[in-house]
Image: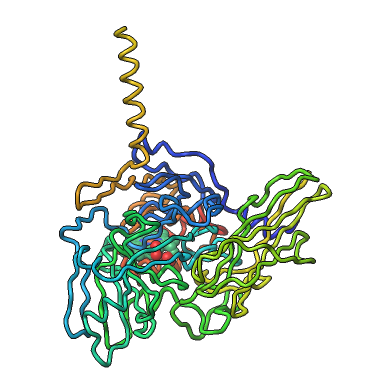
Length: 396
Length: 112
């Protein structure tokens, strides 16, 4: 047994009890730090509770057996505690202003007059997997459930910006949502993209998730979708788009959500980077979803290992599987291809001949050769996690 | 006969409320959507400094921001409390900051 992988994963034990939410309408106290409870929030199925206000909820891995993640199972992550709990589309507007020829203010009906586009894309929190870093890092102690694969529908950001007319000398586009902090001293949440990035064809303002409107907790009525990039940019309940002629000075761009300015985005474990840049594209990852880590199997019985693989905007070229702790690797069969932003399912038939403990490892490579390191790379905020995961299957 | 009808009605009621449970806290009325969030209810462990910690550290977020962290040393917790004050403007005196860091380290951290 590989002790490190096991103990890190065991750190947070899922407590399989459903809360008495229906009866009391409150969230029961956490018993102690290493437990996770299942809770039910509005429009959501039972998710793992990280924090209740602002809500941060993680998706149990079993939902990733499906190619597309159901809306009610998608993770939830807000930063500021006054999240929008009520939106009236009659008065809601999306404004585009700043360094533009003609500021515009769009109702939902007006927004929907722009050409509709869509695709399936992985949404993943920058801190997904943070709880697996060593040494540990403050922040949301996500396991691997701060991600999902969703079919998004909406309009091109580019089309909206063009209709307002971008003035020359513009540098960035900044995005704000309806969420507000409890105290005015807390910096308002804002994300910005360099202008050339913001004008890419595939960046959309989405009003649909899997063909339905967005759940309130996932950003109703619209959110930005920046496929291939971490979800920190996918501003929820988007209401304000500003074209600017200088880089943003906002805390959430200038101080938070930054990675070491180094090809690996990493520093010595526990160290501090000399220079940082805003986090951007996702690293390549692959996970075993079924059977779950720690499962017991019967010797001689055939099963099919199944999981998902994705990268920051490039198709997955290959997924290799090892069932002997990394000594031998064989290619897995890849499932249906929903495009370069979607995850792809991988399948690997296996018939364990002998009883014993097997360590399963999975490694994906994308079309430009980006893959996964064997040992984790470390950075001070716990971002970019993509080490080769190790799973233990017990055959009896 | 009456008895049977009553049973039938209560069964129907039961199923209606079960159907609503999936949408619990969510209301869609014409152009309007609203949700009611479950109230946080976190009781920190008994001990000196608990009340100070509970009252200051829930101004901007729920107390599970503390209880769901991993085990950190006092120096690390002091740095977090300082960040809350310096970066987010938490209205906490230097004296209370020390009390809070002591309390959290004792009950949710490691070392003294």
